[in-house]
Length: 291
Image (cartoon, rainbow, N blue to C red):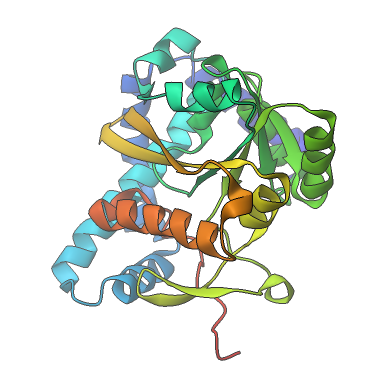
């Protein structure tokens, strides 16, 4: 998408998102119909992932989850776009941090936090956390190939004060902040797929051999950060609750892979309970352990 075309598309999105969310969800319904019934966006990937993750589920159950996933995916796109105009007070009643005292108590103890979560629920709205905590919040991101879209997404995610860190510079940046005595929270999305050359650890996740990034664990142990899993529940359309699960207060005391196993177990539990809210269109298992 060239810059001129992007500006036209963005202008349309900017105007559309002036409408309140209940109206935008009607647009999401249309997008869902197009994505599922007309285009079939990555449908083979979604169905294959679901069947491999839940081999005991019937075709009828898989189809039901698939349709629910596509509706949620479209809702997620709409909700992210809605950040362009939505004021904080609108988010306050839709995205509830249940026990933020867990985070602020760690700040009072002088602890930075490795915050771990997956592509579950609405991960872009986590940017609101900056309003409720004493730490400075940072988010590690992998750049999107299209520079215009990459800039737009990063602007939305940093709208409420979160600072973005390019993946390539994350380790050095975090070590520098730690050495300077700054107290901070760093967002780590735990369910991304490493490149083939980055794979150094495999585990069983959702019934499949899965390659996992170890970045969160390595950095947490090196800097003795607390590790907190963000457990998100989608209560209904456009409404979420987040509970902070403190997994480890002193990462230096953990064994190798203990942190990774713990946060993946939390994510897997949440996905199994409500699978339709995870990002099934992602090619999470494109590499095989035998390779």
